[in-house]
Length: 297
Ligand code: NDP
Image (cartoon, rainbow, N blue to C red):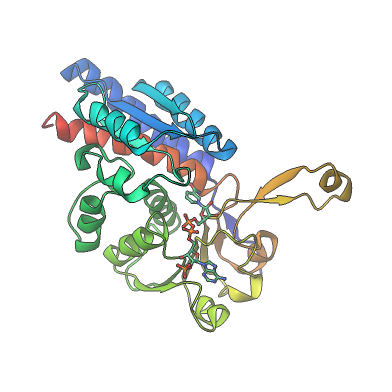
């Protein structure tokens, strides 16, 4: 059997970002509107710092107004909520993203729900999550949106009737992906840590989405031959090379045993270089959508 198609995130995310940049230029020229994104980072988690830097750089590259608010790890709820209140009221800011996870001691749900739903570009407020679950338009979480763009690229014929299994049920990833697959008329099963016979369930999937956070958990023989596999996982593991491992160096791998998947799947996303790139592109696209809605366009 031929090796699976690799669903590269770079080409697709570049295309989305080019469309965003063109739309930003049009909005500026025709309506004097510059979409603006504010990213809020609390604490000094190294992975979050990398994500936040990339979000800032790429929103600027698309011609958007961009601001990053870095707060120390010990920030209290009152200070954080006050900042969100100011950003909610700021007309330059059309999208607000609070980088998760927040340090322990901060109430993530309260912080997210303090966002104006119209500016909630990660689609995580209860209002936007409820809209998604009820099939109403709203702002949709960026990573799930990126996964759907990748799936549509592989399946231009449509996804209707396909059997989809999503492993993971988090509010950030698993649940919204399942909702979007359902909207696309897939038959959807959501698996989680209490699911029985997970390998067997995965083998039934035409579309298999892994959003677990466990390195290479999904093995090649869990995958139906020809299936499309979307690997959301970002896990840091020691290098296989013993010298590098001994030096404490780590690398990123997904939730899927990638080399095994290549031999069985029809198409598979790499990690890194897959879904992660789409997440940022979709954040920019959501900010433009939010800016247009706020301007009544
Ligand atoms: P969470 O930890 O919030 O959720 C993990 C989910 O996996 C839970 O629903 C959990 O089940 C389930 N799970 C855990 N262990 C098992 C198991 N042995 N068998 C079956 N299910 C299991 O993680 P997130 O959803 O936030 O993130 C998932 C992964 O995606 C992480 O690696 C994260 O880094 C990555 N990620 C990548 C992004 C990107 O841009 N590419 C963006 C966001 C996340 P239960 O509910 O029962 O506990």
